[in-house]
Length: 379
Image (cartoon, rainbow, N blue to C red):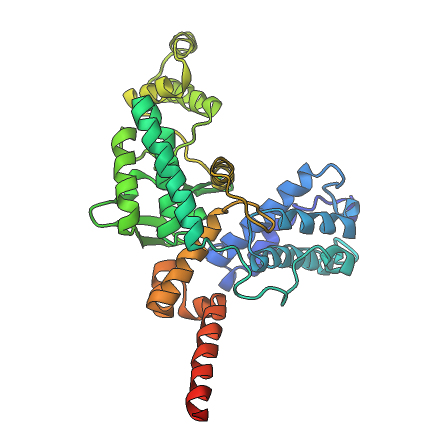
């Protein structure tokens, strides 16, 4: 078999070993790199216009992948990082003699990527005060109406309300509270990770360690009301479960079979008598079978739906309040009201990163202060 006909993913493990610090197969860098490359390989396999061997890929392959990255809910910097990691892998494969040239570095391939210096710190979506007012008012009304009409059936509306308040006021990353199909460790925030009394939630942070994040007073009541209606059977239940009915039925069937050792006939007889999300949730609760958590894509779909219902239209690539915009908006408030150090603590980031991300705020304040200084000088 010639090197060119080798599967693109075949040398992945050897590449990762070469990048592991000290020759060890561990570390945050290696895990992040592996996830990124596995994502690329999964996309490559799903892309009907690309092959999966080195002799079947070219600059157009990477152009399509670059364009694919720009359609995701990622910051320009994250898009460039993901692409750079893929390019590094391809470059290593070139040096190993598996490919003649690193097509990922061709200009035509990189053209869809966002400009390296084309985004100012204030250009990313950040939920404004008006956004927070409109979206929280909408979910408040939805939950109030549902509680009167549906009783227990209102859990979906109360889940959406709690989700919006957490995104609005906690500064948490979506990836820290929603499931990630590509990372088994990220299976969504669990009730056992939440302490409403201490106003905190424990999440697997971006830097791959467990971190306590704040739940502000604005989010406590929505979370408390929601927990009372949901009535999770155990601490292992996700805070934001999916309401996708086929997924709920699958969870129920699998649990009755694997956990409770029911026969296939008994399972189907039992499941056939259930109708709708309410009865399925009651069955999951009765048999202590946690439903699955929504993932990041599911959270984006929820926010898109809520914005449509609230007639809230935004300009830009999203057209709706994307989850990451809630974090950005919380950062804006903290920087303006409490400064960069406090904002860095809330966002679980370094002060250096926060200063860079929100430098537009400091620049405006400096301009006002400098203007006042010149006015005072000229008097």
